[in-house]
Each structure stands twice: as structure tokens, then as C-alpha cells.
Length: 305
Image 1 (cartoon, rainbow, N blue to C red):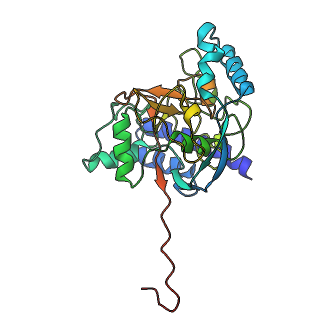
Image 2 (tube, one colour):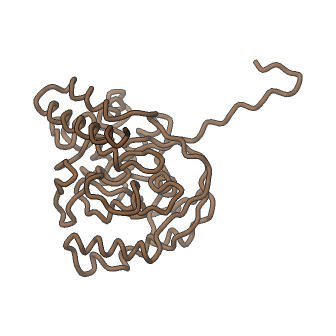
Image 3 (tube, one colour):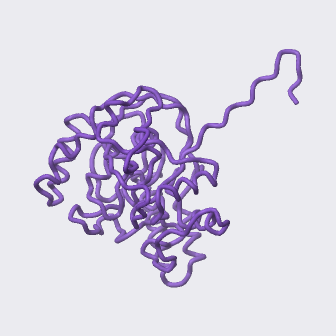
């Protein structure tokens, strides 16, 4: 039954975009909502996972890069060296948004005069439909939104664990690349229509691309800001428990690839970097949250208040 529902959800989301463009946003929003079910936040329990790439993963990335038509230093093995070494990491329990933050959610923050408007016109339905992921926001603006909803940006390790699960899968959805389960570019700097979307897609529209933890769009749609500063050698300094990036840097780590980026960037281990004040039309975010601490049990012989 689930295999039948997923294509229907994708079709409903595509219909929603067409209806919105035709001036029927209310019905479009209702159809978009039908494509999503489950809690808005997913709890990731404390545990170990494998972070980073080994030599076979890097070789796979090089082949996929070359298959897209790129050659020379763009696809050199050295370009993926910052994904190594593969190492084991333990993360404490946390919560993370099941989808990327939408334009509709972000506009509520703008309406409360907490968040600055994104650098995209609300009339541009290629990217600014209410169910599209918000983009055109800087790192600081993403942080401000997450604080407003009681969260924060995920660390790079938390992001990768949510994308990869407890396995060593190369993509959020599995071990092999699939052009039809994520919103991506063609590898030559242009959009790719194989996924059904020319630009942004409504969050969760390509539900067959869910991660092992049930998160949508961890590969493609928009790049996602993380909390960590970027460094080529970050993994060499990683501690084994709840690792963080360097204390300072020129850019922050972005993850996941986007609607216009090449397929190899959709791998769960791929790392990108962007200056914190950049606000690109294909970079958004999702928020993470600390797990609420349970109230201490009352002392023996005493009633709880």
C-alpha cells in the first residue's frame, strides 16, 4: 500500500503547484498537505553511526560527477577528500524537522517582525509558493528563525545522521542513485526535469526519497545550512561524541544539494561551504531541537506536585 500512496502524494503536490499558479492557492495548499503525514519533528535517539566516506564512496562520487559531463579538476578525487576519513560518531538524542522550513512557516516569523524577509519575491511561484522550502536567507536569518520556534540549526553530524540513519547508505533513500526520487540539477549547471520539477518542489513531494528516519528532501530541493563552521580537515579533529566543527571559519557547512546542483551533491556524505551572509535562491534550512529533559521522579514517600 505504501508504494501506491507515494506516487499519489507526488502527483497531488504537482497538481497543487499548477493550481496555485492558476490563482487557486487555497485548494492548492490543501492538496499539498495531503502529501505529508506524520509528526512535524522526528526524534533521533542517542546512538552511534558512521560519518564520512571511504575510498569506494569517493570513487562512486567521481564516476557520478563524470557521468554528468564534467571533467578535469571538478571531478578529481582530491575534491572529495574533505569527506574523509570515514569514522564512527556517537550523537545524543535530538529532534529535527521532518521537512525543510517552508515559505509559509517562515512568513509567519516575518509577520511577527522577528525574521527578515527572504531575498526572493513572493510573486515568483517558481520558488516562493507557500509549500516550497524557504530560500534566499542567510545563515544568521536561519538561526533566528530556529530560535523563534525553540530550536537551532543542526550540527553537521546531526544532519548526516538524520540523512543516513544507522546504516552506511550513500543517499538518504538507499545505496544507489535514483534521478526520480529527489529534486536535482543535471550536472551541467542546469535544471533536470527527470524528477518532475523545473525549480523548487513542495516539501515532501518526492516521498520515495525519504531518509531511513523518515525525513523528506535530505537530498535535493534546497541546500541546507548547518550550525558548523567549515574546514577541509574537520573530520581529522572530530571527537567521538557529539562532534562540532571548528570554532571559527569563513564559511558554514551546507548539506544536501539542491534543485540546480549535480547529482553527486545529493549523497548523504557530501559537504559544501557558503559564507554566512550569502543568501542563495537554492539554500534553505531545517531546524533541530534539544530533547526535553524528563522531570525528576518524586522522592520516596512524597507526592508529586
